[in-house]
Image (tube, rainbow, N blue to C red; front, top):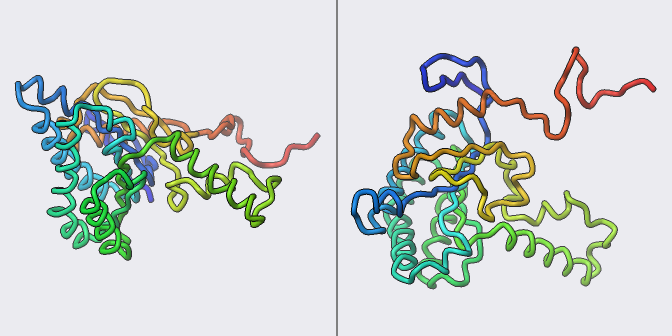
Length: 261
């Protein structure tokens, strides 16, 4: 799906391809709260409002899949009150937002290790997935207790078990075979990753899937990342040439075609 995207000045940059899949590292909630002399949970609550705005933007621009890094496997090491506040916010979000997402035709999926969450939170996640499973308007993937290294290790364990069981030959272990066991195997790889908050790193997020993902870093703190900022990120993406390891198409040469020796 593609449409015209305007940049921050309002000028049209042509028929730019819109990313099918956008991943976001939502950073800066705590700093946003500190700047306003508010408690940390206030920043996370403001971050939920930013999520709503970006979801609207995705629907308007035709983005098919939105993956949000909500709680990393390393976040368990944060102060206990903050962890509790984050999990309480996730629980409240699932209780209050899922019906509207379902009414809007949005499918909700979770990736990550769920076993450390409370049984109640696990049930809320399962209910959200089951309720919205048949929706086709868009998909929102929420990464919770997720880490890119964990994802790769889990996929390797599954491959290894298949080899032990005799259902797979080690010679058949290829990148494609391993990719089929990754958490996002059913979705197209992320075309664009946005990180807010000023840091230029991916922080153990979707390490396998980001092989050719375009990265967009902004100093805007997540609660301030609104629909205009999202449009700027899409406009920047639309100006990039994605070569996937190739050289482009100089002088009319079609990449992937055969060259005479």
